[in-house]
Length: 292
Image 1 (tube, helix red, strand yellow):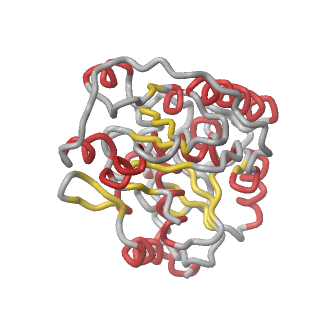
Image 2 (image 1 turned 60 degrees about the horizontal axis):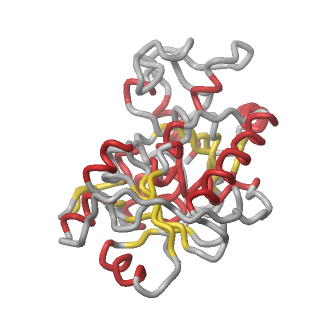
Image 3 (image 1 turned 180 degrees about the vertical axis):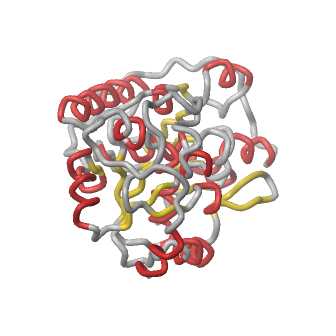
């Protein structure tokens, strides 16, 4: 069953199913108009995680509390949305990944985001919503989708998984270290051996804004980086948002074994003991051809 839900599907489901609608946008934007009943949870996007044991434990504690305060008890379907699929760096998908990691059983992402909802002529609200807090279920975390720093280093050395960098082109070629400015991180470059598919490439224009490409279109894009449905893939970006967007698209397209290095470049670049590739990736095309 697809994680994505279309605006009209969501409108119908809201009348019949217990749901918590979560708006991941900036509070000021949320105040200008949001889905009726939606609660605002900006930390889904802003929280910077590290993948050492303390960092992952902090991530679990932070979001078990935040999602419980938003009203998730395990009985409700969590529905996350952002403004549009290409304007929030995949922040609604980041919420999907975090909830999946925490083991939450029912999660949807509004395909097309708020812009698609509004374009469909569906109702919006400017009323602030006070959620009814719940006890977030103590479910086992989905550790099989989370890659920590040590696991990523082991994957670099083993060379068995496709390490997929989905950052913007200026980050991939080492001209910038992050979306927050070229020198936000201490080092520029890539994780050694990484392949590249810029995250935008897995989406296309729709009538009401960007949407995810169809399964065969996604798999065709993956082939350019030597990735098939059977290839184990570890995705990374800067802090796990664009990687989460890609994670969801690849899962929807049938790629069987996808994980995220959630600390991504923000964590990797700050540890001088970890190897990086610098400069323009001259040999990328040859490496992808060999991998395919």
